[in-house]
Image (cartoon, rainbow, N blue to C red):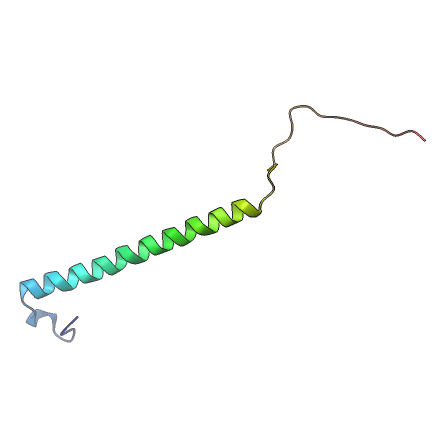
Length: 66
């Protein structure tokens, strides 16, 4: 902000620009954070087991004698 000590001294156009700048910075941060979250989710998914935690529909029982 050009004169943050006294925002009432800003003209309406200057206030509009300042608010737009703050809003744009917030939206940019939001997009960066969501992109990082998506990258982390993909990384975690790639590192997880391909079988997942599902229990197979058919259960096999094997017993060894001997």
